[in-house]
Amino acid sequence: MKLTKMHGLGNDFVFFTDEAGATKDYTELAQRLCHRQTGIGADGLIVVVPSEVADTRMRIINADGSEAEMCGNGIRCFAKYVYERGLVAKETFTIETLAGIMEPTLHINNGKVEQVTVNMGKPHFAAKDIPMKADVPMVKHFPVEVAGQTYEVSSVLLGVPHTEVFVEDVTKVPLTTLGPALERHPLFPQGTNVNFVEVVDATHIKVRTWERGAGATLACGTGCCSSVVMAHENGFTGRDVDVAVYLGTLHIRYAEDGTVFMTGPAAEVFETELAI
Ligand SMILES: N[C@@H](CCC[C@H](N)C(=O)O)C(=O)O
Image 1 (cartoon, protein in one colour):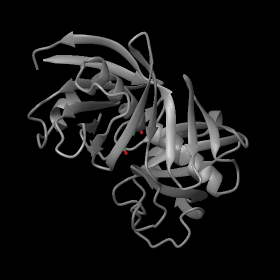
Image 2 (cartoon, protein in one colour; image 1 turned 180 degrees about the horizontal axis):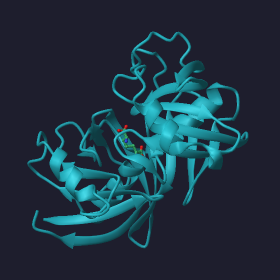
Image 3 (cartoon, helix red, strand yellow; image 1 turned 90 degrees about the horizontal axis):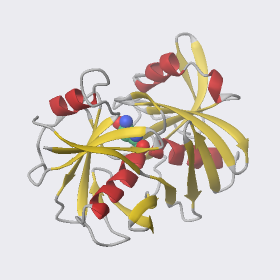
């Protein structure tokens, strides 16, 4: 089988195409290929499958084998993968995901996709949509207790569930303890991705993410988008924001009508053939 390793700002994925992959269970394959010591190593497995309602369809399976509805960094890589392999010949096209249809626009230089802008749709703020166990009336700002300490957080659904914790300094957050404690907090029956957000000014924030099903990653596309949405909704930033992660920057636009646009790089690391 032909496998391709790709990354979006260090959030890395193993890709392959499966014409018969619409309903297959990839749990075991994702766990095996994503393992950092005994596999290729990745935050997730992404499978290109045919779609009946869009130009193509993306399935994203986290490193722990759970299937996610969407992946922001993954979908930019996906757009590059399908275009450069001639699976889609358009520069703006549609991708079916479990979170609905997304629309990438490619920025091409010498035939290679360097950056991708994705229409990520609109965020959902209702507790029942996120989904959250308790009917918290104001998801933009509410207290959560973890190990006897109370944190003020914001939650939102943007393709996948996200929770933001606004902090003074992202380098000082206890990512690997507070991250998993919030990810599996009883308030979130389907888990949540957790973003620690430092507001630099009205147009710049810094984000570190603990991902549901993948742990600490170098970047999370939907996490950057949801952080900008919640930073704006809480009055900390405008609608056009540069989000700094470990390896670079994503530009997020939270348009007046609520639509979120994400622009950032996508890169191929290598392609290989494996008997799996
Ligand atoms: N890395 C992602 C999100 C992938 C899915 C997530 N781990 C989940 O289960 O919700 C991104 O770039 O958005």
